[in-house]
Length: 271
Image (cartoon, rainbow, N blue to C red; front, side):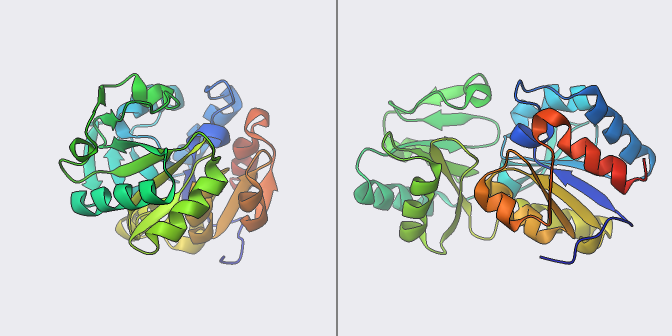
């Protein structure tokens, strides 16, 4: 990871659930004030989340943000004001189907869902663990090939006998370099296009904006945030983060329920 910096910040990139948001899903007033201060200082403030775009309206309104967000673990660049997708990197349907079949051979009992950005498709038996996603146009699909009748944003797999860490290890062994495998804390694994991650999404945005990676401050809590923290000049984990994230971060701040992100932003801005 690049040498940590506490000055000259050119962009702030943060995960949402478990990081910027409190455990009840809300944004504290202190955090909202920190976001406003960053924007007033001319520092872009960017959500970088595993969530799909269709779940962003409420959180963007609560935060008071109208700029760009990186969704679906880096696969989608989303315009919050226009509610429009500006870039969408997809996993090819043929590869997705092949991976489903191979993973199911390796771990019988796996059930799958497919995220498309605008909607979620899922097999019978897939648990309603994606509460936000399940409330927005879910489609139950009985035939797995119908999950991938077009290219997908990401595959989501669940197995009742695996947690996120063990399922990720299993999936990585099967998938190899053909796709990017990660998880964000629940009992499931997420599989997207090769080379597409939160880190690649922020890298592309920084290139477009002319922001050096050394000038990026990033915040996260789960393994899907690791590429983001690795890219940033300053990678910060909240205290409640996954052990892998705590080990990889340049520094650890207070938890998501203790305004950890806001505390670092205040320091970076000299507040």
